[in-house]
Length: 138
Length: 482
Image 1 (cartoon, one colour):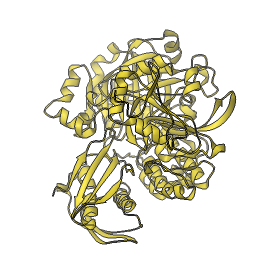
Image 2 (cartoon, chains in turn green, yellow):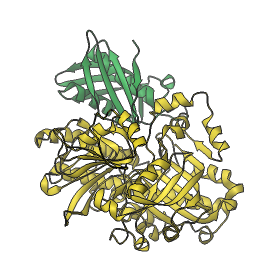
Image 3 (cartoon, chains in turn blue, purple):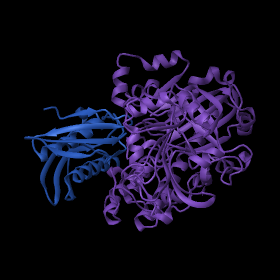
Image 4 (tube, one colour):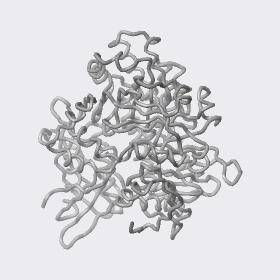
């Protein structure tokens, strides 16, 4: 299964992500976002950051997860490439993400993502997998 | 035309979407038949309909001819809400890049004056003005300095020596919107804002040296200080990460306001709160602060541009004559006075990818332009023309004094990259006499001219519809992109 694919959206950038479980869906969505932001090959696993988000509604939780990760990049300079969702239930999410701080002498940034939008946001259960689509403002 | 949206033709440039279930007002699109086919294909009318659901919306949900599919509001969307009738404020109706806008700087120079120095100018601008993904400035601001920027906007920049007092009167809102409250801007937004003031960013933002190729209205052009063959500079950028964070913070908050105030919406990206609610007021105060940050940003970039011209061309400020013509915002929400059924009322106008276009003698038009009207700046994309237009009375009557803001995309960024594959877009542009320098590898392909609508067509529609009038056409000579 391909981790994600682009969907056409005139103004912005949309992705469709699939996962075998909800946890994997979240992990892959996080990975996809950083794959759009930066050349991931050059990112080393130097630091681990724990992320905790509260929320009941699954699609909003996914948006909040991506928003939090995006802030970690934009506000604190983190680039992540490994995502492990430890807990995902009705109360929220707990995850460990690994990567390192941005260093422009090593890292090649690709596309600026301004924000995660709620437009057309949905998390769907397929037969034995999960699927989501997310539109980023770029 | 399959007419899925039940579009009714009013005249050659006006189309109406009649009110249907959930819509509080009809929709109105400004387009010609050719343009309409394009926008129907990308389903923009659906977003125009969705906006008509907003509580307190007055008269119409409007779309300018550069409209295209966005999220929540379409790009090119305009909507006014009435605070006395439960009218709402919607962060998605303003956009993530709060006060993304354009400023135009005139010069005394003509093309021959810079011909031999164009590359030098471009290189100097490229190294002086930080641009590209996540570009940061050498200037690091403390929290208290950011608070000042949020309150004072371009005034802060001028006070710190970035530019001239006279620049302020030629900036929309004089470069500082009232009602900004730094306390309503999150620490996260502060953090993102501390090293990005005076940076161009990436995407469709640019700084461009242009030549005035054609004058349509000599009297108005003369009043704006423009003449044929003249060199001018266009700066297109916004509030950077600080603005994106403000929008993001409040969109998340307003997910709950919708429930609290019992608002039913077809798209979550339209989340909103009544203008009179604490949520609505807080967002407005934060948004105004971000708008002011954007004005300071463009003011500083203009200042550095003037310095580069002075140094490279070895001319005095007087010889250069680099006066600001005007600075407009095209992602903004404002309380404005408008006439509804013969009565003057205060409404809140959302402009998401739309430009204010006030007519002659309007009190908000700067004194030097009182007799002709407000300059409207319509930037093209790299490689395409830009236009200077002027506001009209008709726009006041029909569109809350609003008009188009640019060309509008027709291709997604991924599509553009595919089309550009194997082509040397940079070379194609240089063959047309346009030099370009960009930070990002993909930017030139994503922003290639074919990815956008024909700006000449967009501008002709608003001109013929009477929402603003053509004054001058500018041709790009040298562009820096993020």
